Image (cartoon, rainbow, N blue to C red; front, side):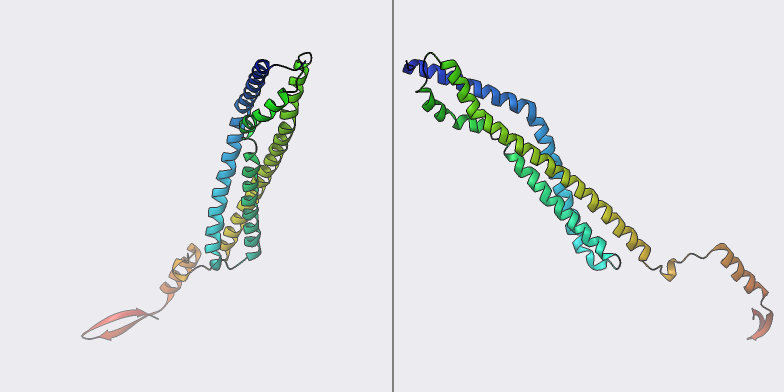
Length: 214
């Protein structure tokens, strides 16, 4: 015998409340983890974008190992793409409460066909049918978000290393200007000694005499 309207409404409210509790529990357990992961992705996106813009602006001053600079740009570009992918996949993890709200109509339609003798089994079956595929989809999104974040971190580290190598090689290749050249103590001593060994010659200057070396 099918359920009467009052029983249908009571069963609908009970099933809907159960789904809301599961959605709330799921959010309580995993929301902090998802938020931390998204914060890391946003931070890497910001830093990578800034380094990429600055390095491109200063690329005209790079005189050596430009191929490493190209690797650096590619690494930071992949960091940005991986970070965006991680944030994109994470969006699907926050939609479960909205999915529960939208599923109320489907629950109402299926409750009309319930039989009194099998109401418990049918209620469990409809909840499994609604939640099971959605949880599987969320699990796939979660795995893809984690893989994207790992790729983002790896490419970011590669980009930093390449940036450091380019900066170091550029410093080594910069010629030393004459006014900044540092004279060694031995050279200074030799120059001073040579100056002192020169013979002294008196020359007449005006009404007096002066002594010069050489």
